[in-house]
Image (cartoon, rainbow, N blue to C red; front, top):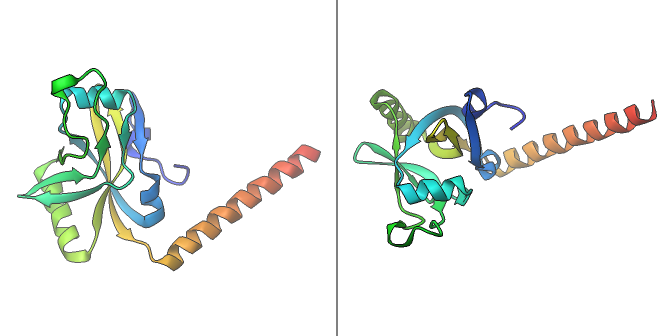
Length: 164
């Protein structure tokens, strides 16, 4: 993530596990929050092996609690009967005042909550949740054009410095 540092990059001793690059293409990310996640032991072992996918995941409120839906954690190879369903809903752990603030924003202003990245902070697994607004098709085209122009400038600078 060149343009903006994630919470995972700012923390010391954190190791990035997975990133949701599709979220940056589909949404404008207004704010980022760090949340813990409630997992079972075999899920943590599977995450350590890198068997997690955030691509089509999103967050939703149920009974005043925040859950991540659609996050796929592959079953642990040696987990036998202790393995859980790969796409089960997982509870996110945040302070009550943060949850109340997010619930109000999502309900009133049409924001959505999307998991942006999954990382280890020490021995704990953390989720970076983004408060996002959806992009229109013309916004996506504009973002792609800006990225292409930036790559072209970098390419020209590299060529010019190679011949100097």
